[in-house]
Amino acid sequence: MGERWHKETSSFQLPVGEVTITLDDVASLMHLPITSVFHSFEPLCVDDVMFLLLKLLEFSAEEARADIVQYHGADVQLS
Image 1 (tube, one colour):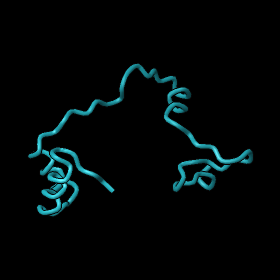
Image 2 (cartoon, one colour):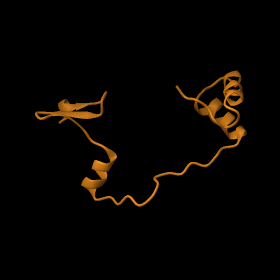
Image 3 (cartoon, helix red, strand yellow):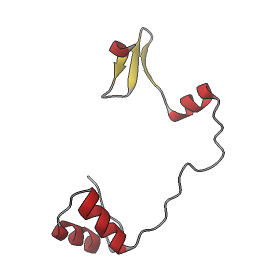
Image 4 (spheres, one colour):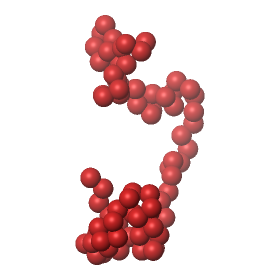
C-alpha cells in the first residue's frame, strides 16, 4: 500500500485512477456520527495574539506589531 500512497497529493494511485480519501469517507467507513461543528473558535485578545506570534510562530516583535496594526486587532495573515 505504501508505494501507492502519494503524500504530496494525499491520494492513492489505484488501477482505476487516483482516489482521494475525504473526512466524510473516513466517517462513513468508521461509522462515526457527525452531529455538530468539530471546533468553534473564540476571539483572542491582542495580548494573546502577540504571545502566539512571538513564541509559537517565531515572529519578531516588529513583525507581530505590524500584522496586528495592519489587520486591526487579533487577526493575522499566514502565508
